Amino acid sequence: MMRLLKYGLMFGNLVEVTSPALVGRYNRALKHLINKETALTEFHIDISGYSPEIGEEFGDDLYLNPNGCNRQFILLTTDQKTAPLLNAQFSTSRSILRNFIAENEGELFALTAREAVAGELMNSVYKVTSPADLFQINQVEIEADTIQSHVEEAKNLQVYIDKFMNEEDAWWDDVLIAQMIELAKRTGNIQRNPISLTAKSYAQGNYFTNHFGGLYVFRDVETPTVIAREHSEALENLPVENILTFDDRYGIAQFLNRCGLAEPIVPTSENMAAAIIKQKIDFVIISTAARLGDGLGNDRGDLSRMQIRQIGRKYAEKMPDEFHGLMQVWRWAKMDGAPPNLTSEHAAFFYALRSAQHSDRDLVNMLLSELSPLDFRQLFICHKQAFYDAYQSWSEPKRDYVSKFLAEEYTIDKVGARETLFGLEPGMDEEGVYEGPWTPPETPVRYIS
Image (tube, rainbow, N blue to C red):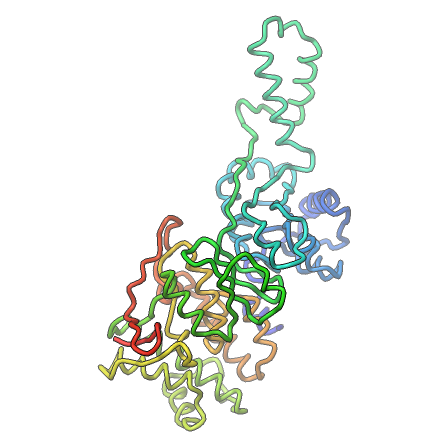
């Protein structure tokens, strides 16, 4: 994994904590939340304040996420809003934290100038013991304050001020005035610099969770569905009728089609889409060559398109079905070839899809990345943990090629790459519109014109 660290592909964009003042604030917050302190004088934190170095020190990667259910957080700076969320147990947690910071950025900037802000993403369960518990989580609320309770004290001071200004004879209430003065010493002038954090509930609608081997939970769709990586008896008692596993490719394709969640990358013959498919073909070639023991040459991460073609010709007879199916799509899009005929059972089927434009786009692309694992770029973009897990099983040549490719081709323009692959970022109120060229001759989902 050191190669990923070297190229900034792992633990990237974390916030560095080095000053004694910030370390002290972090420790006070840590003591407040979990009654522990770190002995480290330098470390890095994610959007929630989790530090991989401290996780290693404590021997607990969930030290801020007890039971993997109610994520606690420590904010030292509003700069954390651009950091990733490590060890996420729910796919919605980072967006909730990011929105909370963005909605309260001015207030949090003022608060963190004097002390850390600590809080928790609270839901209605304290521990997930069975998959059914996931359906008890409908809303996530954020509770946050400084260790000295500046927000709470500011609320109390405002109550006293209102009482002082509105009640008759309050001017003569020495106790009230003394309480106001004492609180104002700690909160400052809240009339000029208000201290309040917007309290908001966030709906927990459709999401991915790492619990129970990994589950995609779709509740806010026409056909509520749970998609699991593997079958488990514990899934049989869920309050949804449609329970699928990754082996049920036909069922997943039907679900995505019926609910308007996915669309073909190449809806028509189109050069831009053809280029995306061609890169996916390259990734399949690289993966196949690495699996067969090819060293991929000396310039591993800098292979030209010609060199990749040469590798493809070398192993032409050993290319997997993913290669042949994607070649059908590419010939149609680029060379005016015959329309592809990929059923959901074909290995290349999910490689040729992307999410439609709707508010759950990232979640659907995350699911598709797991269903098309040879596309290491999409896996890295959409599902970091699945990428890291897969990386550990790859050969050294493939690790080298992939890390260099991502560092040189993706990270230099992340936004542009995402827009090219998945389209413009959809608004939260956009609904999926699915008009893909799939019609049901033999099966209800086919990739044909």
